[in-house]
Amino acid sequence: MYGTIMRARVKPGRRDELERFIPDYAPAPDSGFIGVQVGWEDKDPNRLVLVVVFKDKESYVRNADDPRTDEMYRKQLEFLEGEPEWIDVSWAQYIGGATRA
Image (cartoon, rainbow, N blue to C red; front, side, top):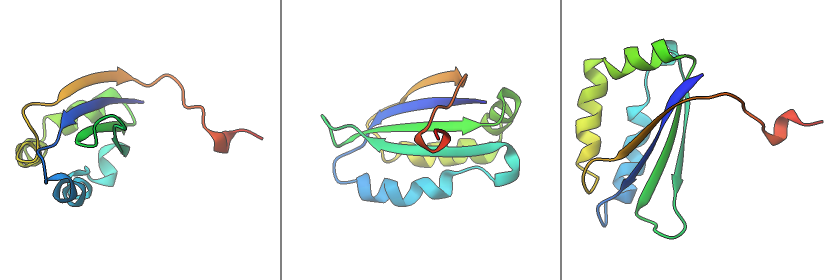
Protein backbone atom coordinates (compact mmCIF):
# COMPACT_ATOMS: atom_id res chain seq x y z
CA MET A 1 0.00 0.00 0.00
CA TYR A 2 1.07 3.57 -0.60
CA GLY A 3 -0.25 7.00 0.29
CA THR A 4 0.27 10.32 1.94
CA ILE A 5 -0.24 12.16 5.19
CA MET A 6 -1.39 15.74 4.82
CA ARG A 7 -1.31 18.35 7.55
CA ALA A 8 -2.76 21.83 7.14
CA ARG A 9 -4.33 24.73 8.99
CA VAL A 10 -7.93 25.50 8.06
CA LYS A 11 -9.04 29.12 7.79
CA PRO A 12 -11.14 30.26 10.76
CA GLY A 13 -14.83 29.49 10.24
CA ARG A 14 -14.21 27.17 7.24
CA ARG A 15 -13.96 23.80 9.01
CA ASP A 16 -17.61 22.77 8.51
CA GLU A 17 -17.44 23.65 4.81
CA LEU A 18 -14.25 21.66 4.38
CA GLU A 19 -15.73 18.64 6.17
CA ARG A 20 -18.63 18.68 3.69
CA PHE A 21 -16.18 19.02 0.77
CA ILE A 22 -13.80 16.18 1.70
CA PRO A 23 -16.05 13.26 0.62
CA ASP A 24 -16.34 14.84 -2.86
CA TYR A 25 -12.55 14.94 -3.04
CA ALA A 26 -12.23 11.13 -2.80
CA PRO A 27 -11.00 9.37 -5.93
CA ALA A 28 -13.19 6.85 -7.74
CA PRO A 29 -13.33 3.38 -6.14
CA ASP A 30 -11.78 1.73 -9.23
CA SER A 31 -8.73 4.03 -9.04
CA GLY A 32 -6.87 1.96 -6.46
CA PHE A 33 -8.04 4.29 -3.69
CA ILE A 34 -8.55 2.43 -0.42
CA GLY A 35 -9.58 5.18 1.95
CA VAL A 36 -8.92 8.34 3.87
CA GLN A 37 -8.96 9.18 7.56
CA VAL A 38 -9.76 12.72 8.63
CA GLY A 39 -8.54 14.02 11.97
CA TRP A 40 -8.37 17.27 13.89
CA GLU A 41 -5.53 17.99 16.29
CA ASP A 42 -6.46 18.33 19.96
CA LYS A 43 -4.09 21.26 20.52
CA ASP A 44 -5.43 23.20 17.55
CA PRO A 45 -8.97 22.46 16.28
CA ASN A 46 -8.19 24.27 13.01
CA ARG A 47 -5.28 21.88 12.27
CA LEU A 48 -6.34 19.11 9.89
CA VAL A 49 -4.59 15.77 9.34
CA LEU A 50 -5.56 13.50 6.42
CA VAL A 51 -4.20 9.99 5.98
CA VAL A 52 -4.78 8.76 2.42
CA VAL A 53 -4.21 5.16 1.31
CA PHE A 54 -3.99 3.62 -2.18
CA LYS A 55 -3.38 -0.03 -3.09
CA ASP A 56 0.06 0.80 -4.56
CA LYS A 57 2.34 3.63 -5.61
CA GLU A 58 1.27 3.37 -9.25
CA SER A 59 -2.38 4.03 -8.32
CA TYR A 60 -1.31 6.94 -6.13
CA VAL A 61 0.80 8.53 -8.88
CA ARG A 62 -1.94 7.99 -11.48
CA ASN A 63 -4.38 9.78 -9.18
CA ALA A 64 -1.90 12.60 -8.50
CA ASP A 65 -1.47 13.11 -12.25
CA ASP A 66 -5.25 13.19 -12.91
CA PRO A 67 -6.46 16.71 -13.87
CA ARG A 68 -9.56 16.20 -11.65
CA THR A 69 -7.25 15.72 -8.66
CA ASP A 70 -5.52 19.01 -9.40
CA GLU A 71 -8.89 20.76 -9.77
CA MET A 72 -10.14 19.38 -6.44
CA TYR A 73 -6.84 20.27 -4.74
CA ARG A 74 -7.14 23.89 -5.90
CA LYS A 75 -10.67 24.02 -4.48
CA GLN A 76 -9.39 22.55 -1.22
CA LEU A 77 -6.78 25.31 -0.98
CA GLU A 78 -9.63 27.84 -0.66
CA PHE A 79 -10.29 26.43 2.82
CA LEU A 80 -6.65 26.39 3.96
CA GLU A 81 -4.17 28.92 5.28
CA GLY A 82 -1.43 28.26 2.75
CA GLU A 83 -0.04 25.07 1.27
CA PRO A 84 -0.37 21.89 3.30
CA GLU A 85 2.53 19.72 4.44
CA TRP A 86 2.71 16.36 2.58
CA ILE A 87 4.50 13.20 3.68
CA ASP A 88 4.37 10.38 1.08
CA VAL A 89 4.76 6.91 2.59
CA SER A 90 4.88 3.22 1.76
CA TRP A 91 2.56 1.57 4.27
CA ALA A 92 4.31 -1.47 5.74
CA GLN A 93 1.77 -2.84 8.23
CA TYR A 94 -1.71 -2.33 9.53
CA ILE A 95 -2.28 -3.55 13.06
CA GLY A 96 -5.82 -2.94 14.21
CA GLY A 97 -8.07 -4.02 17.02
CA ALA A 98 -10.34 -5.89 14.61
CA THR A 99 -7.45 -8.15 13.57
CA ARG A 100 -6.81 -9.43 17.08
CA ALA A 101 -8.57 -12.51 18.43
